[in-house]
Length: 203
Ligand SMILES: CC(C)(COP(=O)(O)OP(=O)(O)OC[C@H]1O[C@@H](n2cnc3c(N)ncnc32)[C@H](O)[C@@H]1O)[C@@H](O)C(=O)NCCC(=O)NCCS
Ligand SMILES: Nc1ncnc2c1ncn2[C@@H]1O[C@H](COP(=O)(O)OP(=O)(O)OP(=O)(O)O)[C@@H](O)[C@H]1O
Image (tube, rainbow, N blue to C red; front, side, top):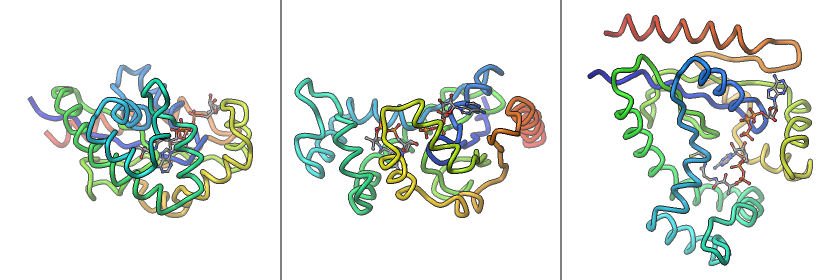
């Protein structure tokens, strides 16, 4: 059976990546949520556990042995080299895991990977098209203040460590506007028919 197209959905913190993916889910499209899968792997892959502990110290896992995201976030989102080193441990495992997941979905027209870190389609990944979700920074901060137990300072530190909106736009094949004036559902429906057409013209 042929592999599905792999669509990457990315965007800065609070842009609405997960919201867009939930709409794709409503269309029965399987989603790979890379951030949460990365956390699962960090808890369950012994090699990652060993390397993360060597990088960040024993506090990277709590007394119950679970990945201590609060501690790790406060360490890496203020320290670029440390974030890069953490990515270098986790990212290759996530890429391999994504490929296995895509293969498990053989026969479907397309599947979606949601991730904070994304390369241009075809570069160091198996993504066919990249969708970038955008919203103004002020609105993103408001949304995260409502959703998470993070301070504005913590949110701004994460934004500082993420790629800029401009470089995200450079890798975008499609852009979804998720500001207060744009409607998400019609944009996702339009992408859905675009990907179905792209897939049927490929095979
Ligand atoms: C740093 C960690 C512990 C923070 O966990 P926490 O639950 O507090 O936050 P959460 O995962 O919701 O992330 C907060 C925001 O940062 C973004 N983010 C997560 N990891 C990264 C990263 N490596 N680089 C840039 N942004 C990131 C998320 O998309 C989200 O917008 C966790 O995100 C992590 O382990 N990240 C490294 C793994 C990774 O590279 N994930 C990206 C997909 S492979
Ligand atoms: N169009 C919208 N209207 C109202 N609320 C929205 C909209 N889009 C997203 N939100 C809300 O904003 C918050 C952030 O959205 P979401 O979780 O989808 O962003 P994200 O890009 O996945 O964030 P993160 O990178 O932190 O995972 C959520 O609480 C979500 O419900």
